[in-house]
Image (cartoon, rainbow over all chains, first blue to last red):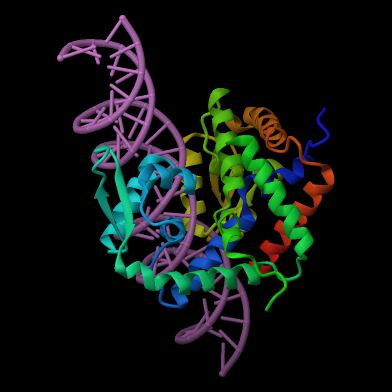
Length: 146
Length: 146
DNA sequence: TTGAAGTAGTTGCATAAACAACTATATGTC
DNA sequence: GACATATAGTTGTTTATGCAACTACTTCAA
């Protein structure tokens, strides 16, 4: 028997990810209350483009841990909102490069502040040491399964 | 400035819950490979009914951290699969009590085993002490936001 | 006892996810 | 060069979520 085996009663919250659901909902609410009309999923795509503009859809799949149809449709919706644009690559005509549109620039600072603020609300009463360990565990879980 | 403030680069995985997404996907895959044809969300409802049969839809909302429309539709689908049944309460005619149907009994042991096995795959290389701290942090986050 | 407020559940709509099947383009090998 | 294989992206279908608006029933208070 593995020494990591969970007692049955403890399974549920790990698998269902209640905490990250709660953070995402709170961030969505904070976006809305501040007049930011995008979804968390759309924001997660913009987040990676703010780090590096001009990624292919496949690179966005890898960065956001989503499959290709999901990114196709998120980019569809972000294009409708005029926050990104698709540009066909000249080297490889299969590839769409995704670039931030002017409207997205103004969202960066505001949404990053709201995200930091939301995490601070979430982490009241948690020490930095505990946060480090939790992050480590979640990273190992992710690496074990990916 | 809060001493819990995250550096920007660390925001993303906490908010998007990559680890719990990965666990849920792996469990879904393990269900499928073993011929268990239900979704993780449906399983999460059954999970609570196995702990206590005969819960109202509202109690399922609280237990699974979902809103009422979500539970209405999950119960709709579980009823179609003949895994649960709705029974109108006689005391309070607003309430549907949800009971496990015979087909659900046989799933309990198998899916619980698969869930434990999935968690063990996920937690390879993580110590019990780290798991305890991670669980604590996630619980505090949840309590801070709910 | 009746009218207001609260609670349980449902329905409609928009967004998103997973999976399979598909098109178009590129690459690598004979 | 031609064909097999791989890669990038799209589309269709089913399931699920969040929010708002709604119905039905219950409770509470004047």
